[in-house]
Image 1 (cartoon, rainbow over the protein chains, first blue to last red):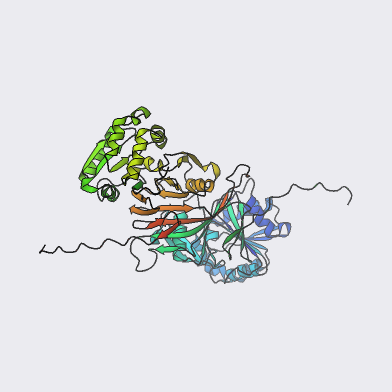
Image 2: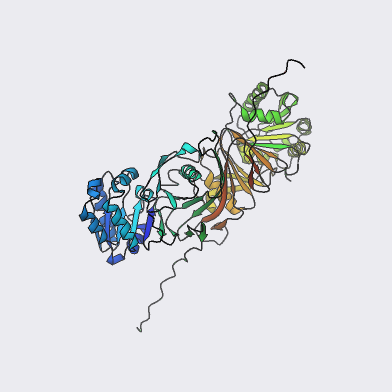
Length: 282
Length: 282
């Protein structure tokens, strides 16, 4: 199961997105979800304080002009299998998944009616967003923990199964802020067919079903491509040494676009033009 | 002026090399300099406590079986132009430059009789080692400061002129420990014809005049190659955005070898074989 080919868009946010000032990322989500016509479901399942989170995001989305937001209080797998939530989701144009604990999120949602409804929403062209743990959970191979810093080694990262909405990427968040390049490189050394994507705080990728990524927000996105790398120490039977040679690294910022299939940068989105003066004669 | 083509070897050490236990790096230096036949000059010019540093290294080299060590107390450019020091250097097989302040080191030595003698020693096949600031100073483009972390931007690094004994590399040290990947990438984004080499503590490169590097010690060496990268924001007139796409990254450990000219990893040095039992019949 993959978002590839689905006409919808997925925003994976690196956490700590601006909710008060420029709010670029949340504004982009609201826009992708339909703006004034958007109907947004908020899933705070990963959070330790779900009701508070839902209330806060409801206010922010309203301030950004979203049509409507509804809180889906899904805490258990039983909740996640309730028809009422799946029906609500199918009437939505966007879903927002908060941060918290990505393992709890995956355990609660995987394979449930709620998960199927989220997937159906993407297939019919809806927009899915997740921040922090919510972003990590989109991958089929999910990072659940690991070491901080630049150290690259087999036990430098812990991997588990994610929701599998994005199969081509391994997503990590709070990236520069928590010094996570070593663990992302350790992940792609073990699964070189996947691209590693490390997203800074207040930064997001917008991932379209055609395989194009666009960067939004104030920080950097790191894409690491180990498809042609030579690796030592990442397989059973390897000795204690670790080396990883020939990884291609892309550091991208707002407006940059990337082709996930071709594994290369595309031309950046042109900066917005100043608004044209409106003609007085219509 | 360059070490390229000179038959000698240069050890660039990432700082904090083990001086008490395995001492792999310092033992390699002593071996390269001739072992029991080695005559080593110690230059603590970069250090704030030069006499202490010289005494300490003298003891360590003696413990590793080096033939002889001499302290060259060069503190000023006047010292560095004294004939006696240049003559002593020309009788040595190895030179060891301590850590401290790389800008002081370069200001004191550049173009002096001492510098000429060090260069002559390399040309005749001697061995030069520098740790921390001593390693950074070998480059012609030298990193003098910058930001910690993964942030890549034009003002993320400060560059100055180094001694120019190695022209093809920009060397950084204490690399993982002080989170210096961002500043090294910011450096090669501006000078993509140079390879960036980031050396961890207790880790070294041995750089031979034929352009081959070998890794020694307990940590990692990062080599970043931006020759084919697309960069935005690193030239005059670029707008405020920074992106750098298509950098090739190599993370190497002890025994790995790298071809600086071909910009690729070579086969690793085979691990040492167990010593053969000595024949009782000579």
